Length: 320
Image (cartoon, rainbow, N blue to C red; front, side, top):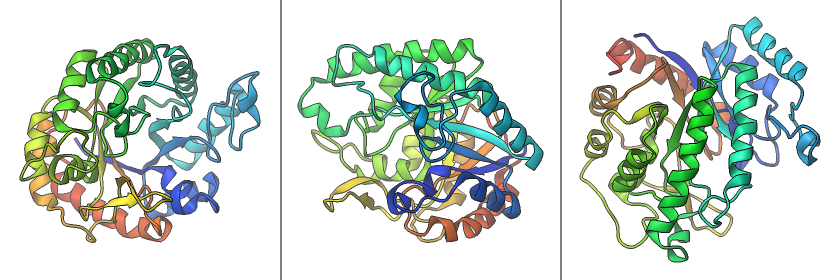
């Protein structure tokens, strides 16, 4: 299986780019020029997002509540020879763990699923929404039950639409320990639900133990973590790690830093064969993630060249 390449568009809209986001058309033009096969959509303003037909979100920048708007975007992408490798759904405004009622979260997920259907997107990213400090307020079993039940419902919605759900386990959100990833994945127990494996997050949650509540759970190498997840990985993000977190506005650790390839400590010649052996992909996308990197725009070309090397080495390997 060869690989198609993409990059997360959120790298150009949040963090250092929050006040000066790069518009989506400019992103597409650059990615096409660099030889990418597509983009992974950050489905929130100012890039294309579902809005909320008849609701307050219709005036958001990039909101596309109408099917005609979505059809136009899909045609534009096709005309450029680009595809969507997935979407990071905008669910951060909802409550997941810190409420007994997840109906609003589920409704927003359903809205995003419909948006994806219209655009031909088959992979929907989710996370636990609340930070790991939520474990200090809500007991583990209650929190886990809320996440599992909600994601079972969301996975069923996605299944009906021919989509899969991929959970990105990272330092910035609850249930960020390696054993949490296995426990929740197996409890959701849906064929279209899996783990999104980001090589930077893998380093931070499994080796560094960043933002683990109640004691760290770490391993000598993320290889151990990858092997734990065998058969559970359904989406891949590739980027380096320097064993640090991005800092929030208060200077405190938030989530993984995502330095460009070559600026970190990861040995991809060790990681890639293990990651391929552990993955269970229904698609052929490999995605770069430069989330929160201060000069993501200028680093994109360098990262694409590095990814091309990885594909030349490992891109034809078995994904199972």
